[in-house]
Length: 383
Image (cartoon, rainbow, N blue to C red):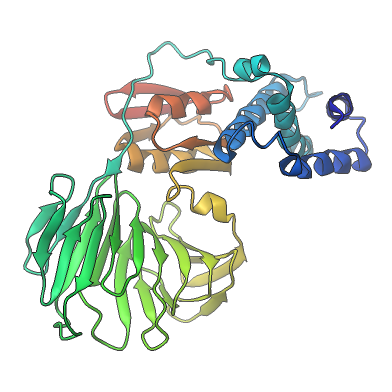
């Protein structure tokens, strides 16, 4: 790969001299990146995305300091143009030298405060049995936890809950359990039909201990990823406050936190039917539905972004701070307050959910458009 040529193209964009052909050439060079043996071996995918996020932030910083001929804000066209080359520019940082990568990771100047370290969440949940008994799973020992009408409930060595039927399907329809994850918690449960459910923080799932009827029905509040065990004779339904998702066997994610009063369903594989009070839509793999006020919008999805939490990291793709912070609040169990003048700049990057919050906030501060005031577990977001 001709690094001098890439540098030349990026400089032409910066000087507003790049043609459409120049931009397409940059896109082509980036598209070839993952096919180049040797380059992709340097960093894993999350780390490459993280470096791209840093590069985007530096580009935004440069734009925010450029004179704008009487304009108070950066033109949207120029911002989009720079975003297009951001990934290619990040490529140069990855393949040029270890020293330059180290330079990218230099700490940004902090506001006049010390960013507090708050540890990330982890496997933490409460299981409520059909008799009302609560089991704090964090403290529970591995092994048998309960026996509910021919169904054994077990905590496995890898920290999951497993429902195993010991007999037939003769379980009363009223025998329901509820798995609840607090802020700063997550958990995984295998239901009695073999369906695997990954629970995000601040969520709850109500389900029968055994699916004895013609349908397999669960109720979700919050966010969860489902790997539904196929059974064409028993459709699987997930009920939330605004919609119902019906499947036979498939993998999908439902986010019903309602940060913007909507519910988002993202399909990874298989097929699902999403319906609200009066409308319905069928999703194909790679699509998402957004339900808001009994209206369903279907569009292509960023599946990697939607499943980032389940795969152990945060992924921000042109996401504003008012969308980013609720995710952090749920995972780190913090209170967030927004200053009146918070930035509307989009954030890019990927970072592990196993990091302390200080590392996440430092990444956000790379834009120089946002700073944080820390008071215990309360974080104020400022310009």
